[in-house]
Length: 109
Image (cartoon, rainbow, N blue to C red; front, top):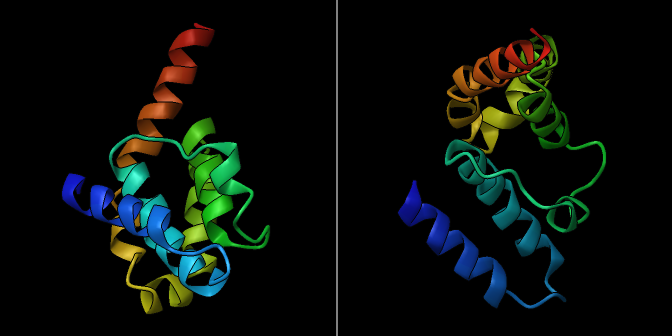
């Protein structure tokens, strides 16, 4: 995933701003790669994504440890995520969402 991260980041930085469709496609693969590496995307990067995009809810569940939101978002957006070929990468994040939940629970106790 590190190699993919570096290549996608390079592509995103070199892609002209005027070609917004390609930048959006790169982001659709860059953000799951970031999450898989444990990197939460910056608010600046998230502002480039449409608010209705399922990745926004997945990132929110990732940071909050909200397993229910994570499962519902994956279930609701399954066809779109499979079409983009990022469903399995996002499905693997379930363990990391659970880890975030455990960390939040530990802080409370």
